[in-house]
Image 1: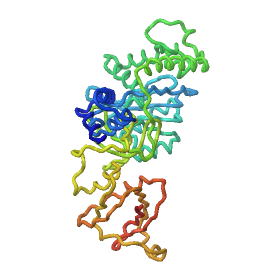
Image 2: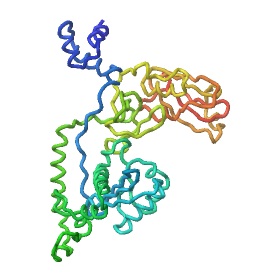
Image 3: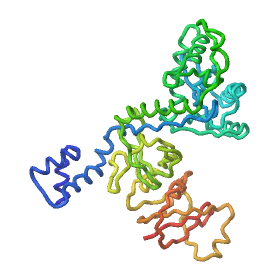
Image 4: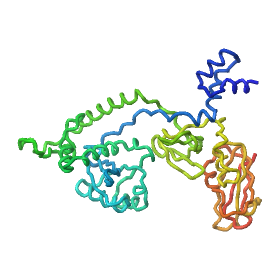
Length: 415
């Protein structure tokens, strides 16, 4: 009876406050306010139509100890031309390199060109572009002895220093004399620090077209403690203003079911499960299409009783159906396979006879009753997706193997 009343209260899918106001006019029972809150939180339609996550409080970066210790790089496009923009975290000194293409080898050569006059930084930060995540770039980072950090895909704010440098670089590139514009930027003092990028990077001012006495061009060094104090004061002020319009989100943990929506997309439709937190506010998420990395802003936690709208369920014959059902927390599923049915391994002797190529994988499916179904076809279900989602609760296990090719060995958690 209460469930039916709750459904009527939520007719039209009002929010928690509106639903409570409607209930006050008609019904009451102990705990009704909490029941309404839970019902709205678990409503699939409301969750799918909910707005984009609110901005979280600003995370500021600490000023490095010296110039070119920490560098951010990014690729931008302007007037059908592509450029590599590099910025030093300490001095805000910018380098702009035109690219003939955006392959890893071309980008690496330009980065080497920037390293040669400034030295090799300890840390390089970039986005997740293919040129930065390729094996060639990983080899380059190892050979040149720097730590490479990537930011969350589809979230430029995660590499904020590079994004600000890109905006500055675009303004410079739009000028008639780009070289003069770049010189002016490097020689102009930063408002919050009182020093120009050139002074912070090299300890002396640059000579420009403005008249200046020779004494001012002599090396004068930089007071690092004073510089750090000014930098922190400016960042605290900016953070205080930014955080007025932000709200911290509850942290996510491995195994949490979530929905994914990128900026510009409509509706929280793609389901997934948290695998791990690879960086602050950045998570690896397992979906039916594979593992992706997303920022917390693009993830929304699914309550335990949440049911995904039926129109977004995969077709019953789709090979990804078992993964989808598992990720969404339904009670059972069928494991489709194009191999012969599974047979139990009763003792260790059977295990020793298993071919070496057989890979043992633990699939701990708490509360589920998986059923293996043979179906002729070239594609096996991606069982590794399930194996990446173990539960901590132990249960009686039964070892199963393929009785033909022995491709994999599974351990199902049975009720």
